[in-house]
Length: 89
Image (tube, rainbow, N blue to C red; front, side):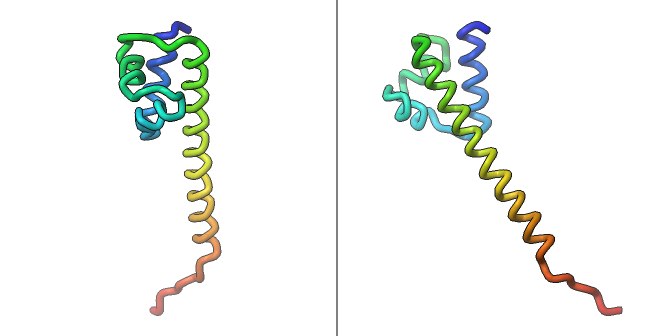
C-alpha cells in the first residue's frame, strides 16, 4: 500500500471517529498545521511518524468501539433487568 493510501485511510478513520487534528498533532508532538499538510498531501511524514499516527488513530478507534460496546451492553442489561410493566385491561 502506498503512503498516500495509508494517509487517506488514516484521515477517513480520524474523521469517522471525530478525532481532532489538534489531538493527533499533540500526540505526535507536531503542530496542527503539519498534520493538515500531511492530510492534504502537501508534505509527508517519515515512516516512523506515519506508523505512530496510524497506531494512535487505531488506539483511539479501538477505545471508541470499546466504549460503544460497553454502552450497548449496559443498555441490554438495563432492559433485561428492568421491571416488567403490564397493561391493565
